[in-house]
Image (cartoon, rainbow, N blue to C red; front, side, top):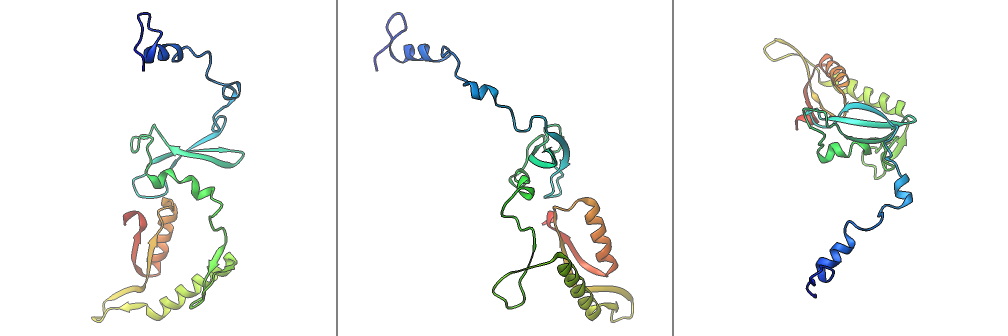
Length: 186
């Protein structure tokens, strides 16, 4: 490449001087009229539903639909940053591949069947009652009252809020279930 001449119009230096900072307006009319998709959206402060850290999120919605979720920069916990799972929270709501019906696969079956939600809830209740009735321990071998069912366990989902987790825990404890943990702890 040729070197710059004495007035600075040749070579690399001259090329840079002629092109950087002196282009009339690099923004097109269309680009100038664009606005952020979150403009005029309702912003709700929420908590990431995954682990137990409690990162704050901003949920943007328009016309009753969530259009964006991002980290809350005002949060002392995460300062606007989210882990990969938290950053993908939007996909919990807006994912065309997310199942929205109950899928059931019978024992030894090779395919899934779509079933009504009411059927699934009744089936779960029936299996819990049958298992609890068959395995409930009123007393231990020494005769001490223990009221427990060790044949059912529960792993809670981290996408549940505190109120839901509280109610589920109360239900399982009332049934005598002792093997209880949560995905957020794992």
